[in-house]
Length: 261
Image 1 (spheres, rainbow, N blue to C red):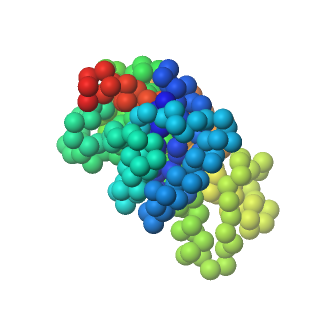
Image 2: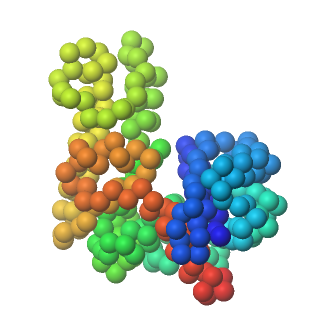
């Protein structure tokens, strides 16, 4: 079995997959660079047992991380507790299976590469992959599967945190779903409307500009923890695919296993 780890700025997702790539169990932890391999192991192995996943059955691991400070603990977790030397997306010698057509390819986040690989494998191209995370990223995948660049925008929760910290009389709010009315009849409904519909406008506007610049039809795929909140209200989103990163990690692992990497 494969232990796939996706370490983002807000959460770390752990998933155990069988030899066919099917997810047997997945669990999230908040991203904390101070957390040790031992702490991860206690938490993760207990959750695995609750879902009847045998930790002893794990014989391979792969990590994609955009938080360098987490890498030592995550690598140690794989080596010490699962006896598996992890593949790390972005490290020398690891084939990601995707060509990067950018001036500085080394700057592309590991999660964006595996998302692009998995999206192209399932849907073909050209594509726009929108990942709703700490930042909201828009990744452009060419008709031949190459990564061509994209857009990075502040995530909705970052925007709300900025509003809360900068406006003394405005309360902290959370996004729960589409407000029933655009015109708010009190401060909180007005804020909820502005945050939600303003963000919908950002998504639609960026997608429209990317498609106009690209000059041909592009399928739009949404993923990430907040994607289900926005996908129903954004007309330009064609598919919601919450498992895209884990599927991409599985593809990268299989590609390197075949090549002996």
